[in-house]
Image (cartoon, rainbow, N blue to C red):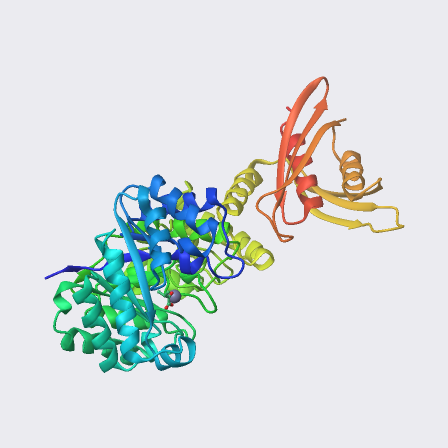
Length: 497
Ligand code: KIV
Ligand code: ZN
């Protein structure tokens, strides 16, 4: 039997609650629609009584999405439930998520109550909510630090009162995976009416165990997981949706989710952007380096058979091959593979030559991307047929100095050098080039741009020159912008007939 594990996303409630993660209404709707596309089963849209913003968020998200269940959080208090019912009035499939603390910390020192009274309050809340909404989820707050026997009594009572899902939160992120799994197993085996409800995991990441604990819960019988995109949430965050979903997909556990996994990267990026919280480069599944094999041995292995070094097909989570970086440690095979992907087919000597150029560039740039490779290939191709080639360039410039440049050009096989001054390093270099070339040219247009970003970026230069009443165009690119400028001028000069 292959059971479905329902995915309950709380990015917009537990995730948004964390400092710095607040979204405006337009952004919340954008996230809710992205979650719907991703295929989540339940969206926790807010805690309606907590603020007018949260109330409105539940109302607007209920109107904006169709497929997922829309859930509103409450405490086990009638007024909270009344407000949630009102906020959920437009939801096609509403759910109320009510509950109370069950650990000794919560029962005694937070709620100043006793264990029997907590059960009564929980049962009363479920019965009250059930009058308005059929789908009721009950959370046993701080279940991670509660006694399993008592927890079983709570779970049995709220299911008898009408709860259809019972949430077992490890609120403080305290549990170890085997403990959390044993808790779920205990409940599955000791709650007589457990077959009438689904147990849900809700793990926090204070000890970095959220994903492991959630998986342990699923392995032991939980059939709903409460998660957030990128694991956003208070303190160290909640369980990351993408991690558990891909762990379930990658292992034969007899369970599946309905998540459309190729949407994962896009959804992750949306949350990173809107919440202004980029994930670390080595973050599982959605980090920039999650599929980046930069060492030659790994790249070669992956090219021979992806599964040599990859347990997940990058495409399966929405990563295309172009995000795999090439570095100075990449081998010829990886370079060739990437060149083929972007439209250049080279082998033998040509590949050797390009590889040497690539290594020179990778030493300067650290990571070589597709735009860099296009420039490299363009340079290689043009180098062959050029009558004039730049041999060397030396520039002296700086504050309170008169810029000067010494340029050496190979013109029809013969190397010649000249030095000139100018009002900047590019002007000085251009004046030196003009002394060397056999034509009289005038610069008409000069445009310089970066490719991507960063101070190690390629500068690309486009020029327009005139000579004998005709116009010629040239292009140059280099990590040194003065070299790129001179290359662009020489490129244009080479086209003069
Ligand atoms: O962590 C927690 O216990 C919660 C509950 C309110 C579900 O977020
Ligand atoms: Zn929580």
